[in-house]
Image (cartoon, rainbow, N blue to C red; front, side, top):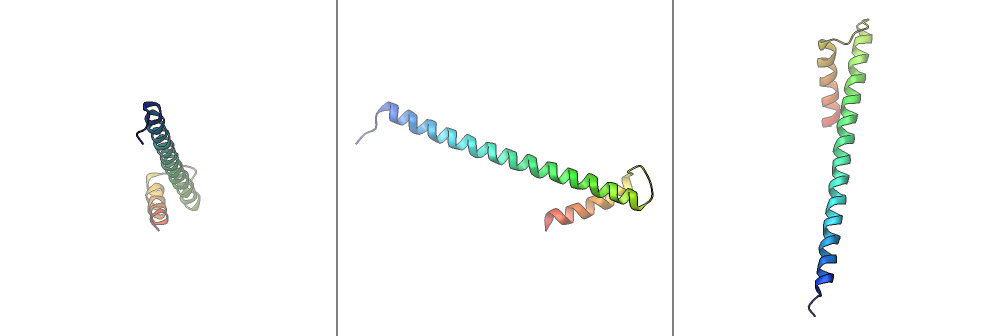
Length: 75
């Protein structure tokens, strides 16, 4: 039985809405993962600076922290 034009439009609209919801969920997942990565990196760099008894996070602290965080996020 052939579908009417309004049924076809509804079907297409449902597919578009479902696709958009999936894209929004993916965008949110990527955003949250990046945010978590940066927060963890900042915390680790701060911990390295505290271990070094300095009040300022320097490049060397970030490098050490980056290695730790990348290893953590890869596993």
